[in-house]
Length: 297
Ligand code: ADP
Ligand code: MG
Image (cartoon, rainbow, N blue to C red; front, side, top):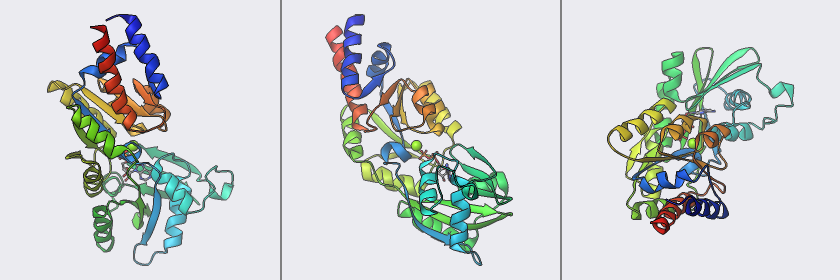
């Protein structure tokens, strides 16, 4: 392989909005047979909006939303941005009344923050159950399942040992995502949707873009493990993602592709960054590498 041809390919990539870390990346791209796609922010736009706040019995919806919004004001997650916007909390955190006294987030699971002296949790119901021993009451779990079947994501809000309500958020499939998936499949690549979100939501999004293989409810370390297991089974794996929760999987994959709108952690772990955050550019990257390497032969 002549370095010149690879360099030309890399240069052509940047014209297409595909930032390639080095010429050798094109070689890896050509060998890919499996593409793992993160859901939120990769297959979907990642611009979420709150569609409902469901208070638990005896709770007030506004109080649930406000506590969640203050707790989320320190997070960059698409869910956090939606909750902050809906709660009309100043996202810059300049208003001290809207700033939590302390804040921590657990990638792919949720956030915990001290709001007016009370520890508020916002996140995946399984995380609240397993890590904090608080469970979603029966009266809300039916609503949660319904929302998830409709393709909506639900997060639970808890304080003082009880789930106080659910926040339902909606996302939309990114324009071009279905086309990108179809073109990846036409190139003979296996496509898999990989998400920390609930199975119902994942199935709905997968159906919309034409993906049949879905792995849902995974934690960041599971995404990493799935990459290495596929590699051990002889697959050459590309991973496309945008979040902190994708960084380990992006780094472990044979080809890590980050959405340009994604977090710094994702971009730093990746071999390729898609400037315009359009999944179709991932297809362009595969085609570019094949063309470049054919020229070399
Ligand atoms: P994906 O794998 O689709 O990109 P993530 O791994 O980022 O999704 O998130 C998985 C799940 O973790 C979300 O559906 C949500 O339930 C929960 N979660 C992650 N971050 C947050 C947050 N800041 N606030 C509330 N929930 C969160
Ligand atoms: Mg994501």
